[in-house]
Length: 180
Image (cartoon, rainbow, N blue to C red; front, top):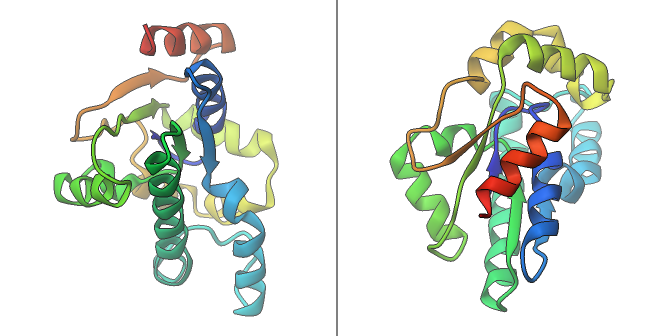
């Protein structure tokens, strides 16, 4: 599992990891799997198109995204396929009980957590730089978003930290080290 705040580089790290697994891992990225569903749901509910955080989103969308990712990961793992799941999982990585529930939902151990460490300034710069409509609400209320995502606050559960404040070369080296 690759977790961290939106814009921290989870997809990049997950792609590097999945390609290096033997056999190569299936990549389940929350935004890829559910992006169209989320956009349609927000529109149908009359919500802003960039709303990807907050109480309404968590209750009506995120809970279903995460349940679907868990079910897909569990099914793929049951057939012997390695899986790399990409999503923030902010609550679960900062609460041992929620983490244990998530591991169970994924089909049980082994589940390895790779956490993206990124500082607030880098996170904001990346969100601005990627210019995605799904980031509009995050950037409009960046302070609240950053408090909620806890960038730089390590998980309370066992994890491998990847510092993603530098170059792609440094990132690739850290991923190679994870698999050594």
